[in-house]
Image 1 (spheres, rainbow, N blue to C red):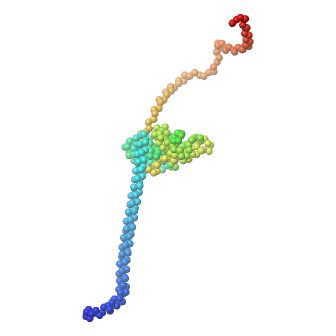
Image 2: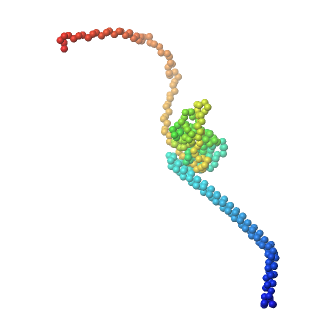
Length: 304
């Protein structure tokens, strides 16, 4: 009653509270520790979840960026193909590479165009950089193209710098072309560009084929070899152009009809004999000595 009315125990209460405060803090430490551990683990879980979400978003962004870069590259390639189509004097059709052929010993690819798209055997295939190959097998919805670098392929070419003509042969898995049986004095240099000559009736003249990277001379000196790198980007691009028609060639003259000769139609060859009835050829007469010229007569007196 005295404390409630007078407040005589206020000082005692303050002293007691000050002395009991450390005990209260010690008693509350387990509770605070448990609360801190719960907050720590909850924040750790939240951070881990946030990191997972950020990684997923990063992967999605990387995929989107890669797809965008791929589409940009394809768009650039398509624009180049459209520009190349404008410069080719033959009708063309766009196609896409599906996969490589199963035979690992050959250089072939499969396109997404076939006989339903009017693709025929022997049609040339190009890209914006140069000649790729030739259609060698046709199915209803796909077609097989043999690349220039295949061992069974050959293409007539000429050097762009000087017009020298030759034939380029594929070298198989090396992915190169070879000019065989080149004369040692042939004017071919490293860096020369080879184009189609148009003499085979398959590839139009003037298409880029390869670039000379090495010139070799044989030990005997009779012939040499020239290595060439194809210019077509077959290992970088998926879109190609199929030339839907072959170049028009001048008509060949008709073959001459040679009639077989009958047996004994030609006389036998015999030595030429002199004719006894013919008069002998006159012998050359000896040259008579020339008489000296007579002296000129003197004019008479009084003659005018």
